[in-house]
Length: 443
Image 1 (cartoon, rainbow, N blue to C red):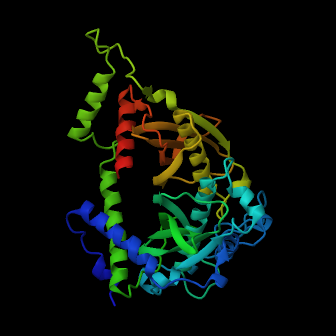
Image 2 (cartoon, rainbow, N blue to C red; image 1 turned 90 degrees about the horizontal axis):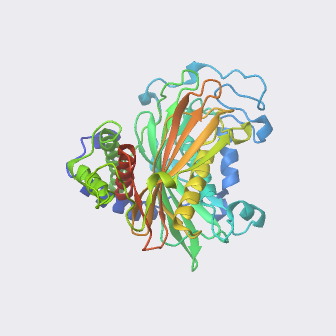
Image 3 (cartoon, one colour; image 1 turned 120 degrees about the horizontal axis):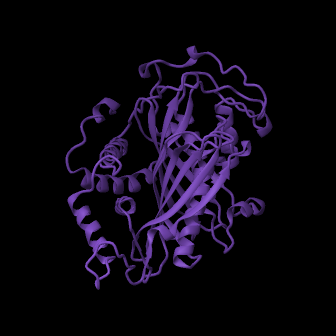
């Protein structure tokens, strides 16, 4: 048996090479672990939502939803007493350790057997509404987090857990079918002091065998609901060499995120090879018949980046609130995805655009009830038949028009069109969007 302390060592050099190898190992080994529940005991996603409400002290009926941080009987009623801060554990060593299998959870989205539910998930050409899957993934990740984060014998958790980051969602080559049930599986695969990584697989039955159609990795953080500061979570106790490798992959993911943050184009200039790319693209837009930088021409089979913008405004009503009376993160992801999909469809002039990857969605600040949320979508990079879309989300105060960024969403779509027009930046800011999109596409 290995303890956590043995694995929090410095990540070895060759991070990118080890990252790919360990990631492949995880996709093979984690599936084979004998954590599975019997089919008769698998809960539906609605049961999972109800269980989650119990874990945070919420009533099962929505109009009596109670939250851990200032519970409310219904929207608009007075805030209830949130409880005492003495219930919060002040050091991690006072919490019992948990294993990967302790948090392992399964749930079913019964779209194949429930025709009424299927109406919410099916799109207009008989495919799956991926935005609904994003909502369910967010709910499922929070449930797994609470299952891991026991704080003693209390049924209601004294801490609040929220989504900090959607690290990556990868879809398989075969698309979802809205006529087959979807099995969700997930577990905590890495845990620090106040944050944890959740890995989830979604499966559908094919030829009497459950096959993976999606892998998702979320990072969750625990908060003290009274002080809003970080709260401790249970450490992971690793029980095999296989689990050690899974945990170490979480460490590699953490270091990779830290390195990418240091290279953020909002903080540091582009690399030398990226500067060369910018200059080459700039030269393509100059008029060859005039010796000036001022006259710009659009290259053949291309689209100016500023012509790909698409915007949407969302008024944030209480109906879309989460357990903590903020706007549900899964809802934000769904709305951002649907705007990005629309942009991709308009760009490619086709409805047959398939999502392949969701990458690096950071929840910078919560969206309050009553907010005016502006979403702006833009095609920022193209490669062959692939499109890289960025959706920027910001809340706007209508009284003074101040703005604050809440999220940036990154989506990769495949149009199956090899003659897809290239997107071309004009300004320096657009070139930075282009390079950032290229980085996300290649990550």
